[in-house]
Image (cartoon, rainbow, N blue to C red; front, side, top):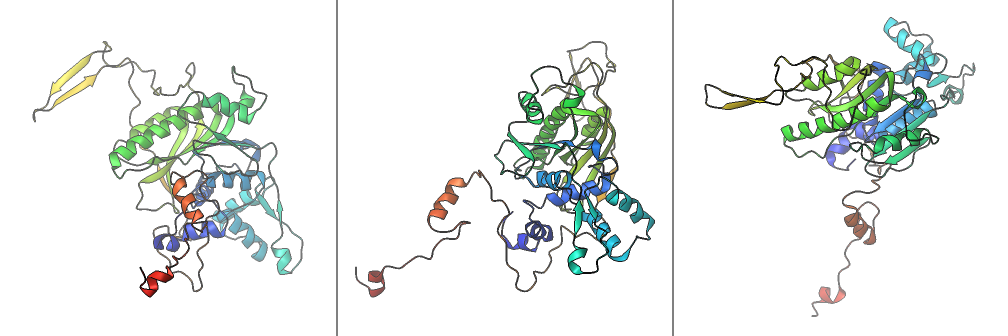
Length: 395
């Protein structure tokens, strides 16, 4: 998170530092959870083993730690708990359903009914952390430690990462066939490439990153598990939705309110994982249907010259890829949430806070170290001291 004028006016940027989040993207996961119940509040035992891919700097891992391990509530669910305590039961039926999810046994946070009227007692909460929670965060970059999170520096596009992940979840795991006890309930990925500004190239690279995350997820997910990943919407993106629909019962595309509307990013939320019988996913392999191709010959080329003179080349394969699929699009976060595209006026006396967690190994680390030597933890250098001789005009 930077310190430019626009960043200071970005409400989610400011709230992230005020609420001790490492990045504003934490609000995206919170709003996705509000819409899809990713953390299974009705049955907490269904979400205790989670893998966070491309985790650095760790904002999504923070959400997992504070919700699953510490037992806290955020966003809409926390607001309903507070309203229920101050004003009693909500009358709105739509809120009543969410209230039941948020205050039922085993949820993230339940307000203590102490009967006291003091302001101090109103802030008291009983936290109900979940049992046997195991969370692994994976990234190529090193990530600062978080409570209850196992950090793994690895490449999700490399096949060797899977056994490392399984050993991080279960230290007693040995290379060999996986059992149901080794599998996880939820895989999330907020990874994105370093954008170039060339949208077609950025969309392609992001789709390859998503494919690697999906392949890893299919190796470790339980049947019925969930998968959430960032995606760049562009031309032919429905082909990606079609591949996801082959292995998941429900596939949605979601746009959290904390994600800027000017950005092409969105998130695919896949529920109900259904493994393909007799097929093991491999890094770099494509998901194909078992439907034979319409042509009988495989491995041949077919050329066709269009009227405008352009030659089209078609490759015949033994299998057809999945047909196109239009995934339902949902906006997460109601109108009461802050608008990520609005520039809110800074309040009087506003002080820009330092980042909660500075980068651990940024590409500009050498430049930062030099500036720190000049005197300043975040690039603040000392004022230059003029030579007295130069002020007097002496040579």
